[in-house]
Image (cartoon, rainbow, N blue to C red; front, side, top):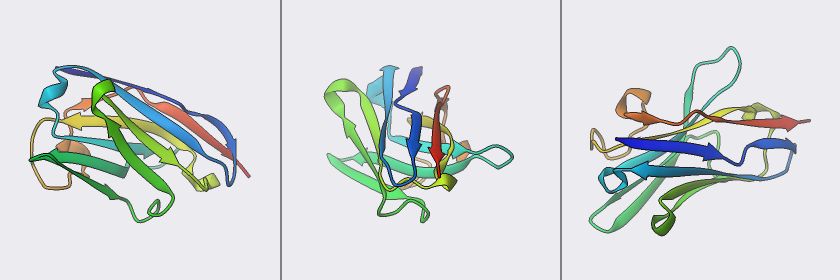
Length: 128
């Protein structure tokens, strides 16, 4: 089992930045991929960014809507994955979740059903 706890959400003005953290505990050595998803009120949960590691290599990938603005990274020593969010827009406002999976269902998992473990979410509010 893996437990995930998100933090770092808050209120920020449009154009500002936030850094979200996803701290993992439990069987962290089994994790193949960690992803960030978000869900705005009245909308479906959507993929934001993901990070995988295999053979000593790290791969990152992003939704088109956040490319160039968001950066996903990880600190192995802290078992933590970060999402640096810059140039935030009102449409980025959502509840952000991190998710993890030990399964290599695809090279770049981005579908919700590819992930087995989920955190409780952290709210990001962007004022215009």
